[in-house]
Image (cartoon, rainbow, N blue to C red; front, side, top):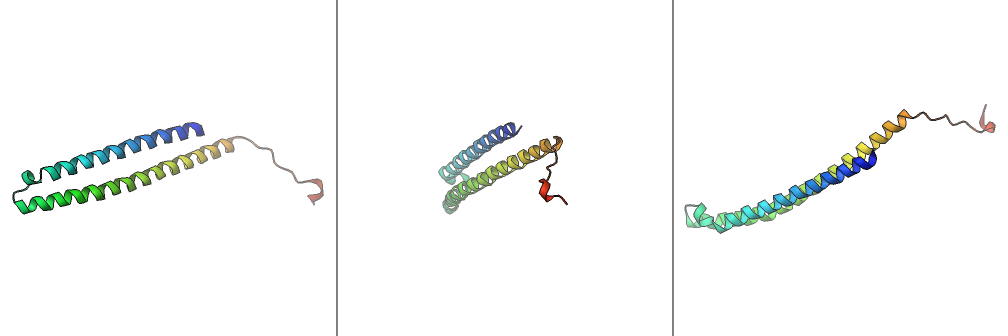
Length: 109
């Protein structure tokens, strides 16, 4: 059971990583598109400079934010898998009956 939990967690981590990678690619594409077409997206010439600057800032900050969110998500997946595997182990151990341990003869009163 524990092996299945960790395999599912590993698959979830790969899916989470793929989503973060896809988000990073989409952010890069969007900021490149905005910076390249800043003149057509704004009315004034001065606003196109600000838009290009904002796109570069969003690219830098967005990449760092995606990495931080990816890290927290990976840790959450690992913690959830650990907790679920411990609960499954505790549940399986509670169902089995264990004999009581007895004290050595010299310790009885």
